[in-house]
Image 1 (cartoon, protein in one colour):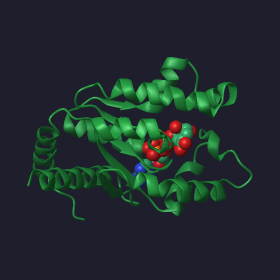
Image 2 (image 1 turned 180 degrees about the horizontal axis):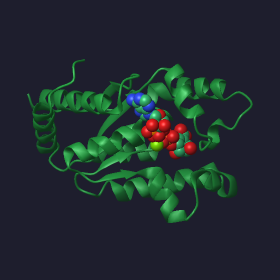
Image 3 (image 1 turned 180 degrees about the vertical axis):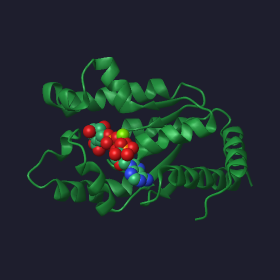
Length: 195
Ligand SMILES: Nc1ncnc2c1ncn2[C@@H]1O[C@H](COP(=O)(O)OP(=O)(O)O)[C@@H](O)[C@H]1O
Ligand SMILES: O=C(O)C1=C[C@@H](OP(=O)(O)O)[C@@H](O)[C@H](O)C1
Ligand SMILES: [Mg+2]
């Protein structure tokens, strides 16, 4: 895809912000897909507030995600995740990056579907694995064979992520280009809904 000139990019972002009309935009998908980093760029472009569910949980618990998993366990992390997302979805116009397991949770998914436009950032295993291997902050991948764990999670989760309103491939291109793809795809989705 060719890179749009800045004026066109701005016009598209403004059009999208208008069509969203305050509805939250929520990014879902696997660890490493780029939800946090692309979400932040997207929010800046739309002139909207950006929030990340992991960051919000960390602030509320005064602990990092790995510490929460270690000291309190995954079920408590998931309960916190659902609470935080329910709260964030009340914020008009917010762009929310979720953690990879959030949309898999039935209650959280129902909330997102009811309140927001959801976007699945989908990426190939090779890209995901390269990206998550750079940091050791994802407790679910602290296994003997993290690549196999990632593959298993992909198998389990992809049919669920596919329930998102829009799917965008997170390719190996700059994050701004992925953000442009999200803008285009959500615009197309909302325009088609309007007809
Ligand atoms: N399009 C991209 N190109 C290159 N690196 C990327 C891209 N998107 C994300 N990354 C990098 O991949 C890692 C994971 O991204 P992150 O936004 O934290 O993903 P997620 O929140 O979906 O787990 C980060 O180091 C980020 O800088
Ligand atoms: O996939 C998951 O279950 C998780 C993904 C992480 O967020 P990112 O998808 O932003 O890495 C974080 O919420 C936690 O480690 C669990
Ligand atoms: Mg993230």
